[in-house]
Image (cartoon, rainbow, N blue to C red; front, side, top):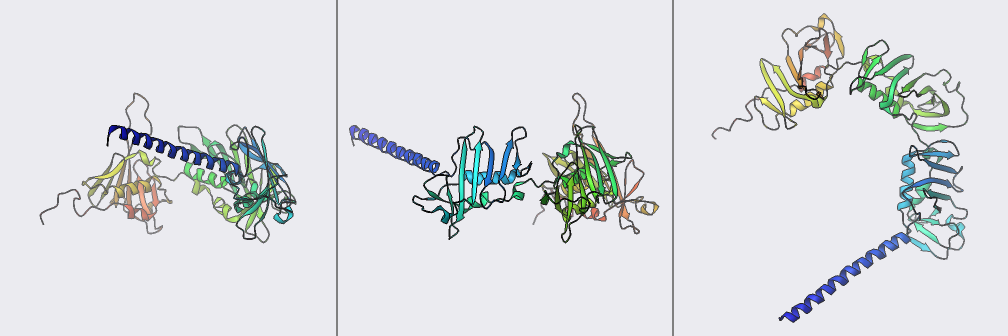
Length: 463
């Protein structure tokens, strides 16, 4: 083949490739245009919806929800003034804005047969720029494969995914925020918890990076337990909301069974009264301190809160340290000492030397120890075995942060484990530097490492 033919073939090939790419680009643009034309809702700024309304003959009362720019939250303004459920609003908007028109009926005739005259639902969306889109949603098709929809005053009936009808078919309760109390857990400065007569008061101290909670008499509370309790309150959800027919005395709210009062950083106060059981239902009435509607909450969601007491909230951890700050561990049992350390963030056994899996038991034991709480303070009957202990555990702990220019101060904590106390069934233990004898869950012994039968790093002998 001569040079001229090669050039001609190359030109032909280049043209073919260009035509192929151009055809692909034309197809892509055509598909994009078709998708845009079949978009169910046309708005200039669909990512910034500012308000929505749902009405129609299947909606008992029209619902209007607006976005509050300051907090970027949704608030219901009709038929009641109340925070809206942001998740429900987001799911509805996502479904409607992402949906496409599947097919069109160009000469629909009587719209009543489609449930569009009057419409079952009318959705109106307004974006940040004031652009408005209206959508009518009617019945499901006989096969339930589609829902009927249309634009007000339009000449067509659209067949759309049935999810669109489900998205706009929301009750007033569904669209309301179901949270009993809305607050930021880290901003709580004081807590008053009344669990059916027992009143517990707690105050957060501003000391260091970790919060310190104290009871009214100065006793220290466990910050993790207090935080768990606050998350219980934060997680309370209403299963019903009553705007009318509120009778505080009959609902047990004028003299409540219990409640929670939260003093927030900055001076605001939030809280909820817990009333009596709902007749014939496993639920209780609750109401916020500042009034408003009465909410109904499942009894089961209040049970753990009702079981809170001073003992459960008290600081009973033996090691008040962060797990990641523990850098070494030793366990002495039967006259032998096993040692573990961290290498590149992973636990390994250093004495006797072990393989890469030998440190797994140390990792689990450290987890147990940093979460270890005493069950009971033992008297003289709990001293058995501490003179000849079952085990001695030492934790080497590095500080979370060291001031610039200062050497890190490593701390060593030592825990001596005795025997199981016959009277209480608890394992006796003593922390070095503390004269108290603690009763621990005896299951801790099961998590202690055992001396290996052989050196796992030793070379294999001849076969």
